[in-house]
Figure 1 (spheres, one colour):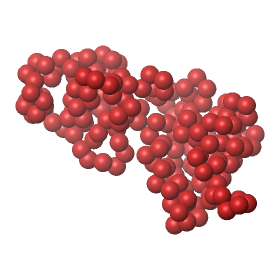
Figure 2 (cartoon, rainbow, N blue to C red):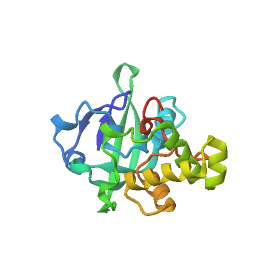
Figure 3 (cartoon, rainbow, N blue to C red):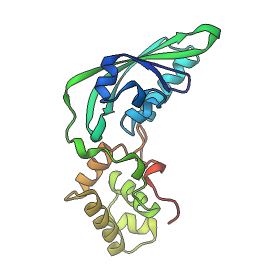
Figure 4 (cartoon, rainbow, N blue to C red):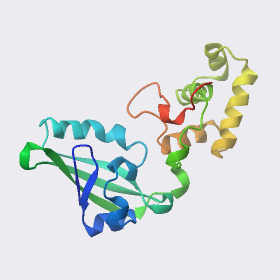
Length: 196
């Protein structure tokens, strides 16, 4: 269990919570909750925490993927509970119930400091591939030749270490690169390099 302030910063946690993330109180206190979760977590949880803050809900339950030291990941059920503290400030208590088995593969979470891995064009091509567009459709939409589209797809396949387009989309999805709950898929801005 952990206590969060209104900015979702960890202000207190029990030993089980610290152990789950492989850190001490000095390592985890003062960090944002999202720093400890898969990159897709903000999209899943922001609406839930907003409902707690404005009083529309007293609690929520959501499945999340947490990050341990060494980029190991685990699956857990998170319960968030709104708590009214002295001075009418709203804070939150988060209860994490981890599953027994770690999520595989453990190398699927990108290093947070190196998120921006696609150019703007690569991101548009990846979005097209994820939505089922053909090479010809992508070429026409992006004003490229078919060979240009295939060249960029080939670069992404090598960068993501996958054998084909389906695996590319699956890998990108597992790394939290796409917006959650939207169609057509959109690559999150933090995975796109500034400029061209």
